[in-house]
Image (cartoon, rainbow, N blue to C red):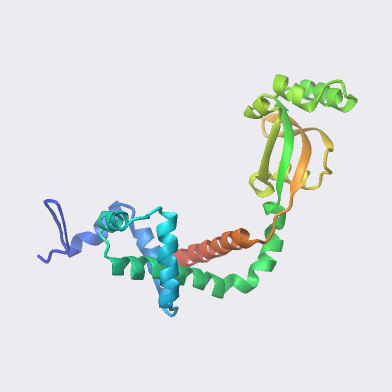
Length: 239
C-alpha cells in the first residue's frame, strides 16, 4: 500500500482519499478550486505584483515581524515559495480573471442592480392589530404624537428600542413589498398601514443613500459575477 498522507498514527492510502473527501463534504470545494485553477491557468503575475501582494497580505494579517510570518507558515504547513505561488499569485490571478472577464460589463450590471443596492433609512411601527395601526397612523398624521414616541410605546419589534428607526439598509435586503414601497416613496412621506406577512406596518422614508460605482462596489460586483459564473460551472458538472 502506498502512503499518501500520515496524520499522527493514521495512514491514509490513495484509495481512501476520495471517500474521505466525500464523507467530510470537501469534494465540492475540490471541484470549485479545480475549476478556478483551469480558468486562471493562462494568467501570469510579475514579481513586482507578487511582492506588492505579499506586503499587503502581511499588513492585512498584522504580521509585522519575521517571527510572526514564520509562525503563520508553520501553522498552515506552507513554505515561503508556497505562500507566494499557491496563495498570493493565485489570488492575483483570480482578480485579474474577474477584471478581464467582467470588467467591461460592470457599469451595465451596476445599473441593473442599482435599485437593490441603494440604501435607505426608514421608520417603522409594526403591530398585529389593524385597528391600532390605523389609530397610530392618524395620530402621526395629525401631529398629536411623533413617530418615535409611538414606536417606543407600540411597535412590537426590536425597532421600538430606536424609536422605530432602521438603517441604513440596502433595498434589496428588505422584503420585496417593503422595498418596492420605499423605493417609490418621497422623503418624509408617511405611508398608510399595510399588511406585511403577519404584521400591519406603518412606514416612513427618512433618507435615501444612492449606491455609487466606487472601488468597493466594483470589487463587490466582480465577486458577485464571479460567484454566479462559478456556480454555473459547478452545476454543469452534475448534469
